[in-house]
Each structure stands twice: as C-alpha cells, then as structure tokens.
Amino acid sequence: MKLAEALITRADYQKRIQQLKSRISVNVKTQEGEEPAEDPNVLLAELDDIMEELTALIKRINKTNCTIQYDENWTLADALTERDQIWDKRLLLAKVAEEASIRNDRYSRTEIKVLSTVDVVSIQKQVDQLSKEFREIDTKIQGLNWTTDLL
Image 1 (cartoon, one colour):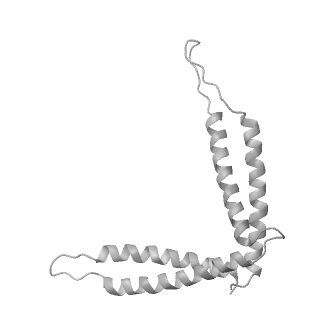
Image 2: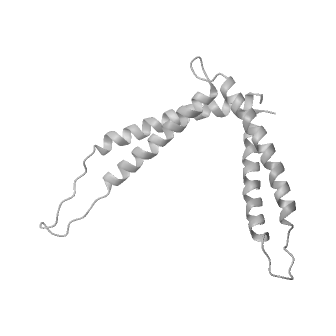
Image 3: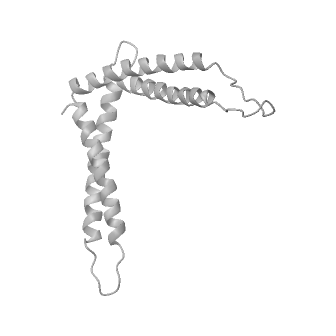
C-alpha cells in the first residue's frame, strides 16, 4: 500500500467513526416499549474495530513519515511540520492584511480617521511568498505520498 492510499483510508476511517458516533448517540435511548432503529451495542463493537484499525494505520503512517527522507535535511515528518507552519503563518498574515485593508469611510471631517498601522503591501508580498513555499513543499509531499510504500 502506498502512503497516499493509507492517508485516504485514514480519512475514510475518521469519517466512519464520526458517522458511528452519531448513530450511537441517536440509538442509546428510546421510549419505553420502543426498539432503537439500530442496536447501539453492535455499533459500539463496530466503532471499536474501526478505531483499532485506525490506530494501527496511524502508527504505520507516522513511522513512514519519520523514516522517509524528503530531502537531504528533512524527513517527510519534518516537511509536513514545515508546510503546516507555513500555512498557519500565511493564514495569519492574510487576515492581518485583510483587516488592515478595510476602509472606514468618514461622512464628515469631524469623524475620527482610522489608519492602518501595518504595511499592507509588504504583508501581502509575504502572503504570496508563503503561498508559493507552501505549494512547492506540498507538491513534493504529494509526489512522495504516491511513490512511497507504507512501512
């Protein structure tokens, strides 16, 4: 199994777990004399099985990410961490630029003038650079995911 396939399977397991949680929640109580639509004990057993499979799969994914080299300096786990931090910083700076760009129109000269305290152009350039770095790292990660065998 390739790493990318394992990641898809992990996402499927996570969706199934959420669905099972909802189904269990709906069926754990019923009015006296009524039967639940589904047996919550069967659902709990299915949930337990999927959670065990998910745990084993996540361990294999993590082991693979920590073992596979992304480049001469980073493992795949390092690259994932860098990519996520770049994305978080990009989101933060994009929000700052957006908020600093909002115009507060004044209807008369007596109203208080609101000024931006940051250089929006400079911040937007940083956002663009971070977006480029994110795309480059993410593209290489996706390529590795489809060529790397899961450990």
